[in-house]
Length: 206
Image 1 (spheres, rainbow, N blue to C red):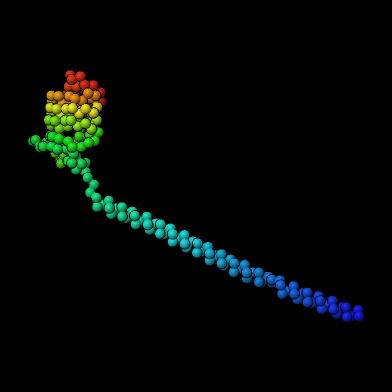
Image 2: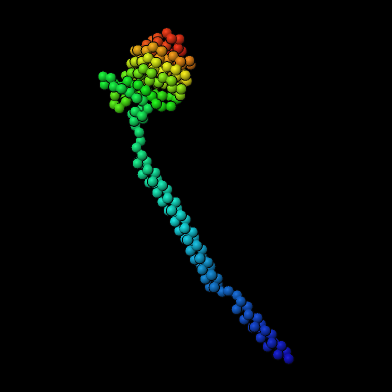
């Protein structure tokens, strides 16, 4: 009986060890599983990098395409030169090779009279050239202009400041009549200063 119990116990122990051996992973099996997982993760990382690269490439390509289109359209637009712009605004006539401004069609508050029109030096602001322009607030007359003719700025009611150069040697009758808030900016001792003071116009020396 005792021998029977011993044999039975041995058989049970063998069966238990066999069961445990089938359920457990060997070190080789664990290593293989980790290697497979690492390979999967590396493949996933590579895919993410490739997708990001493709997206960045598309983004940069779109930017480059837009820049090219802007450059193409910009090149197709003729950029006006200062003389072109002046010619569109100022009317003038030629007198002895010099330009006399005879009219102005702009609506700007600040007007800088050009020193040249179509290659001709501006020497004179003609009679009634700016008369009645209600938008005009400030005017800069360039060096080289020597004469401002009668009524040139007559009734420019918003005109507050006009800068006159040393080259001015003649200002006609009633040029600034109807400009109640006008100040003349000019050099001390200049013809423009003497003219302004004789008409009771405020003067600021430059």
